[in-house]
Image (cartoon, rainbow, N blue to C red):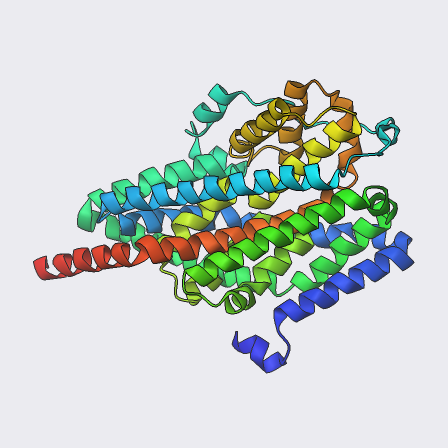
Length: 418
């Protein structure tokens, strides 16, 4: 923070300049812009390098601190998942309503997809038995090396609970994890300071290689997507107001992770800096380290909106009726599948492929969406990050104070015993 003050220009402002610069380079000098992809790739790889140790140490410490009151831990988790499903359900329903009103797929020529090919790593269904079994890692080191967030979260929760149950013997491990967490935060700040250059490289490559034709071809769908995202953002701001927060002030506080999410289309990239900002703003570590990593896997509001809009678009483009069975199929399948595809490549397209199969739509039609997925991904990732901010503030308001008091009482009791 002090460095930004000395420079006289905030990091988020530099990120905007990098974003605009990248767009200009990509559109006016595509040959040069196409060669700048490694700049953005290096940045994202550097962030991913620290995500696993940061998540593991943060979640383990958060669960350890909350271990003084297991009932409160259960309450916090229950409230978190209730919010995740309500927010996701609203996003899906909003996509259905907008599609029925504006008919984004009407008149679209699906011959555009004739030459398109599905990504090689795109799954068309999910083995739910395998999904639940995969939550339990048979090798936590391998799971972390493979960037598997959900198994890492599961092990961290179990490890944190066990640390909380062994008393003083846990202190050396707790101190080590706290040191790792603080080092990760410092490393994060160093990497994030290079974000303007990375954003310029990413944006120049995207515009140089994909151009603007994709946007114009499906302008109605993309515009509808962002209308829905603005509506969701408005609802979130109303909720913040009801929680006693100043919505504009909250947005300003988390402007950096929001801009990173929009420019990189990656929630993973924003996680370390997002956690640090929320803790710095006064939300207890035990709340942030619990709800944020969990939210990045299960609270995908922007993705849910995109998935429902994508499917409705294809249903309309194929000339199929948006009848009640189709609407219920889209609503229920998206609500369930959205929570099970966090670690699946091209997750939104996986969910769309699953629903298309259940509706009898040829999977080849999904090719028309591949070209615009990046443009919608930027916005929906931003809403995912904003939704997790709201979740953290909600959890702080509902359960944070009780958890803080419980931990303080437990620590005081230990000091008295010593």
